[in-house]
Length: 458
Ligand code: SF4
Image 1 (cartoon, rainbow, N blue to C red):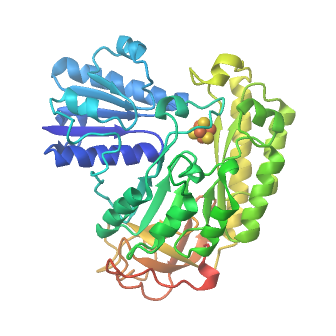
Image 2 (cartoon, rainbow, N blue to C red; image 1 turned 45 degrees about the horizontal axis):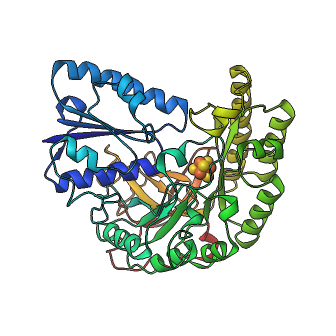
Image 3 (cartoon, protein in one colour; image 1 turned 180 degrees about the horizontal axis):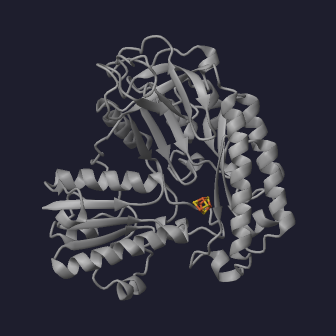
């Protein structure tokens, strides 16, 4: 039997799909390159934005046509599926099974496998097969925050943290397979452990994972200002393998909008958190998320957001125009009254501002040496041993090197840490050349090399 998984959405969805794939392969299924060749097609969906849901619906249209020509099993998993599926069943009668995020058993049942022995919410004994030197590891599932615009708590449920021992086992598995950088995932990752009996926190988890031999870098996503405790920040500042990179959504720069969004903090409180963070780690990279055109957002309220972004100068801003999600508090109680064209203009304004700021921040790296974890090795012949390579800095910046450069990038392979001198910078990426010879490929089990102090956060 052959399976095909189509995934859209966040890193959490990607991690869920990888885990499902590993589980299916453990059961003897083989991966098919396309739905046409599969006996089981799984759509792992996202409904955080309307656009993501529309893409899944259009994919379902393609599968319906395919199913009219031959029989196969269609499963829809992920955030499009809520606790009640009557409406989905009515709209998509040709879908065999609807299942919520991380609930894999119904898929197994649909293809005639008894999930009793192999299922379970997290399939704790099933680890994904890494496809490169980086991997995502979900550590907190669900969310307890209930921001008024967000569908996640209704679809992924209340917060559940995985025990430290279980996470550690998964990270060790990945490192044994050649993974060198692990990103710990949670919708509010710094709330990790609040629901566990002994009450460990993210700082405890980072310390427990830090000394795994062969692991070079640890990251975590996504932060929430209310959960960002000083204890966690101090752990990040102290532990050399933990990258000083924070994804800290602000969502709006206006207190009235933040209150309507039910974010649980004011602009002043957000700014205070960021001050503490930057005080402890002046070179830390910080990205943020912003929603423009939220219910009732006036021009003056939007201007507060724009001014805050100009003042705080983030490395990256993920900006989205508000779209109401059925079932959320905002959908039930607040009119979606900002015209589409106004939303578009505000989106464009933020994108233009951020392109300028990111370009300025990145250009400060020109001529400097940054540490890059080599991630890709694309095809193409540039000479006997030269290949275009790329990777990311500790701050998450994309760096290309080799490629068009005349010198061969001899000895650099995915999974190596290399030093790259930055020669070109754009708002979205950097380009450079290797500083001297690449470090030799490092065997698993060796500790990450000491980095010079000046490179710590780059
Ligand atoms: S913190 Fe808010 S936006 Fe983030 S997942 Fe939870 S409810 Fe959604």
